[in-house]
Amino acid sequence: MGNSRSIRNTVIAGVVGVMFVSALCAAGDRDKGLSPRDVTLTGKIVDLQSFMSGKFTSSDKVKCTRECIRAGVPIAIETEMGLIVVGEGTKGSARTLAPFAFQYAELKGKLYDKHGLRYIDITSAKAVKPKFDPVSEQDEEDVLTPDPEEMISGACCMSDQTCIDTDMDDCSNRAGAFYSGLNCEDVDCE
Image 1 (cartoon, helix red, strand yellow):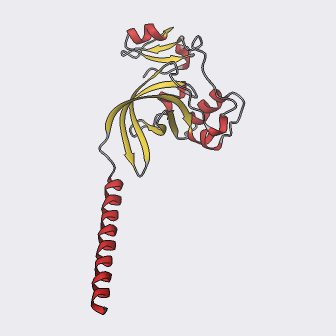
Image 2 (cartoon, helix red, strand yellow):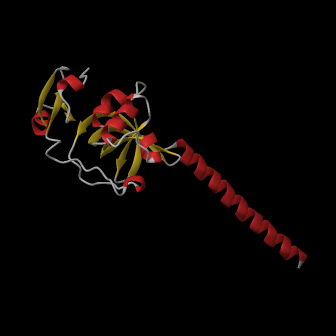
Image 3 (tube, one colour):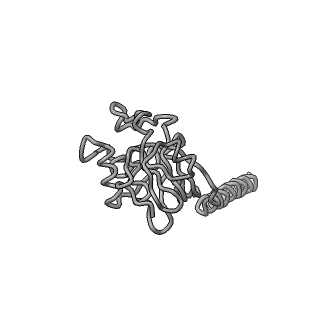
């Protein structure tokens, strides 16, 4: 009896040890993160402070979000797959994304996933019409859905760093970066 109990305890200890080592290996793999992949994401551009707290400094959520982004508050894109932190290399993304504050945009870049956090290092951004409207708990009653008519005109930054005031389709046909609802005097195309 004593021998069978000893064998059973050894087997249990072995199984627990294998499970522990497997868990450590899985955690180590998760810590490494996946290799980044090229993606195109569509969603609403938000500042993390206002988004997470649900507190905006004014009733104009676009203006408030734009001011927070320009002040250096981290930026995220709210997508169908959840919230993804946004950056633009080492220089930050405030300059590129401030014109899209609390509006819908299409971002292209490399997506990183580590420790359950997703981050996109963007290479380009352009305004788009919303395909969906994610509803955040803090603004279920007051979700801002941009009027498609309001998103038609805006500033278009061309590849030669010039700007024209035009509509989204014309800007897209010219392969420009479109800034919905803004004029050329409001954007910096450098």
